[in-house]
Image (cartoon, rainbow over all chains, first blue to last red; front, side, top):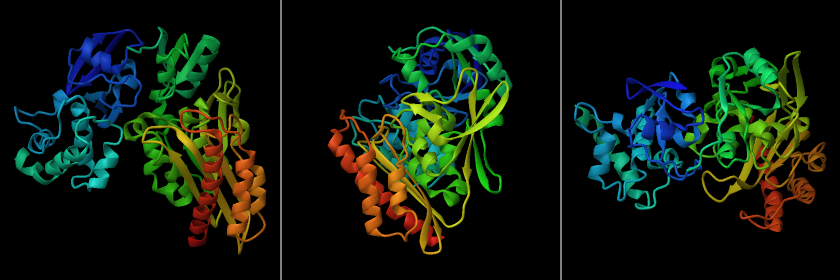
Amino acid sequence: MQITITLNGEPATAEAEPRTLLVHFLRDNLGLTGTHWGCDTSNCGACVVLVDGEPVKSCTMLAAMAEGHEVRTVEGLERDGKLDPVQQGFVEEHGLQCGFCTPAMLLVARELLDRNPDPTREEIKVAISGQICRCTGYTNIINSIRWAAEHGEEVTA
Amino acid sequence: MQVPAPFEYARAATVDEAIGLLERLGPEARLVAGGHSLLPMMKLRLATPEHLIDINPLESELGYIRDEGGEIHIGALTRHREVLDSELLAERFPIIRDAELLIADPPVRNRGTVGGALCQADPSEDLSAVFAALGARAVIRGRDGERDIDMVEFHQGPYETAVGDAEMLVEVRVPVREHHGSAYEKVKRRTGDWATAAAGAALWLDGPNIAAAGIALSAVNPHGVRSTRAEEAVIGGPPSEEAFAEAARLAAEDCDPIGDQRGPADYKRHLARELTQRALRGATERALAT
C-alpha cells in the first residue's frame, strides 16, 4: 500500500506492506536511519519519534497508522544548520556515550520542554522513563535537558 | 526482527463502518486502536488476524471524557495520557490517576487506549480493576444497537471479554456518588513492567459509616478481579484498621496468583493483602477529605 506522512515538515511517500512498522518505514523505506531500532518489544524506547507532537514508540505503531500524520524524527531537530538546544545540551553535559538511545532521548526532551520549559529533575525523570540508557546512568542526560532548559533562548537566538 | 504476519489492512472512519467491516470480514478480523497490546502479540505471532481494522480515525467520535451529571462517560478511544491528565477524573475518582501514573510509560500512554486495555483483558491490566472497583459499566455496540454490562461481567477470563462477534466496546460509564474516596496501590519491578500485584479500593461514606465499597485486584487472578467478601467486610461500619485488616485478609484468601518471573505465589498473596489494606487507608483518607 502507498503511505504518505508529513516527515519533519515535508510530505514523504513510499510503498510498504500493511504490516510494516513505522520504525522500519522510516529507516528502510524513507532512508532516515536516525531513528534507532532497539528491542522490538516497546520496552527500550530507542525508536521513539514524535507523532503529531507526542512521543511514540515507532516499533509499536504500523506505518499505515501514521498515514496523514506528522512525524518528527531526530533529523528534524536541527534548524538552519544550528543544533536544537537539547542537542547542544547533550554536547555540553556529555549526555551520551554510545549514542544508541540519544535520538529518542532528544525527541522526548524536546517535547517535554515544549510543554514545560523549566522542568524539575523529577519531571525530567518521568518524561524519560520510557527510555533505557545503558551508558550514562541517566544523570548526564538529566543534566543535558536541564542545560537546554536554562540556555534554550541563547541557542535559538 | 519481529514483524507481524501478513494481514489485510482497513481503516474505519465511523463506529458503524467498523462494525460493518467486522461483520463482513468475520472472526479473523480484529480491531486495532493504540495497538500497544495487539501489535506486540502479532509480532510474537501469538495473534495472527487476517484482517486488521484500524479504528484510530474514530478518535474524534470515541475519544472523550464527559461529565453527564450522574455519570462520567469515557470513550473507548481515549488515550491513557488523556485519562491521566484529566482533572475531572482526578477530582471525581482519584483511583484513576493513581493507576494511570503506573501504567506502562509515557510514550506507551500516548498511544494506548482505555478500550484497548479493557478488551485485551490481560489479567495484569490495571483499568479493569479500577473500573470494577468503581462499579463502572461497559457499553458494547453491535449492528442491532447498544447494551451495557457491569465490568465484572465484561471480563470472562484471561484475554476474553463479553464483546461478541461484530461488536465493539464504545464507552465506559462510571457512576458518580457523593462522599467518595478511592486509591490504587501497585507493586511493579520497574517502569514499563506489568504489575507484580495491585489492588484498588473505592469507598462511599454515609455519615460515619461506609455505605458502599468496591475492592478489586489485578495480576493475582486469572479471572474475576473483584473481591466481594472483602467489600462485605467493610460495608456498614465506620472505616477502621480492624475492618481493613479483615478485608485485606479475605482479599488475599480469595485471590489465586501464579508464581512466575515476577515472584512466587505466596509473595503475590502477601502483596494482595498489604496493597488492599493500603488502598483502603488511602481511599478513606480521601473520602474523609471530601
